[in-house]
Image (cartoon, rainbow, N blue to C red; front, side):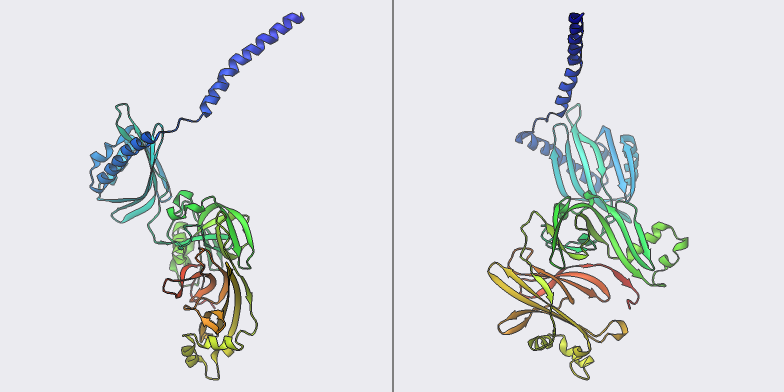
Length: 465
């Protein structure tokens, strides 16, 4: 009986091996890496892709529909996006849709073209600028080409990954390299302007003070800002303290205060479609492309850089007492804007004596060199009470306070050398009119200091008193 049981167990085990063994082998085969393409194969596939892409582009720009559709395989599938609308089409559906598109002359331009050969297909990714009549958009697109049975390479898949209205976007000069970006309300501000919404906007209205936000896909982030995608970042607060986090996603955000009677679309919002109200709010803001950071949410304002870069030299900014004593007062009076302000506001002595005054100092060590800076600001009031406003940035030398050209905003947040050129950058929180602005002041090649990057944080429509 025992011999029979052992025999049955042996047979059962053999059956399991017979059944499971091939499955394991198949699974191992499925996860095995495909052989790498040789240099010659990569060059061959690129040689197939480049003329096909150029033929595809030329056919659209000259309106040749037959030449255009001749580039698509019978098995083709496509995804069309226009704004937030998505349509999936087979080849007959694509042909019907495109025939309608070719009914008007169009202009198509490509940039940031990347050709990525694979074993069985080649992907081409680029940014497309498309315009026809009164409509235009821009966004990333992917085209996949593969060889058909007759050996001819054709388009088997095409997808507009995101579609946005064209718009000017201002990216700070140091942001593409990851050396610098503004931080506001716990988020990294990467660019100002443009329209990159990839989803429905969300609006918070706090008594005419609007905050509007929409999601932005990673593929919609401009090419020059790719280094920030999913990156580890170091965020420096205005106090100089640093924290470490990671970019978790992107969105576009706008803030605006709109007084009654300023924007009719908003005031009649009760009977207005929500999308029109949202469009009106976006129109009243300066949209900011921001990166959400996990780990540094509490930083109200400051700056950030990629953690993979070396930590830059940076100073501790501290307030100073009695900002107009001695040589500081003389230096302030030497500023170009002081005399006109004095003529207008100084009937009973120096006009700044009746103003709200503030100042700060910063010591920065770069290598073996130590430099000290002083920032001064005087403001007689806001709105109808305002008579004069003047700020100045100075370097402390043996001969006194030397004014640095340019008159940045009044609140000096940070001093550092982000780009490693031995010259400091100055981060200010100031105002443009009544609108709060973050600004980066750097030294130009001619030696003058000027604001080289800025971000309008909150727009005001009406009196900000």
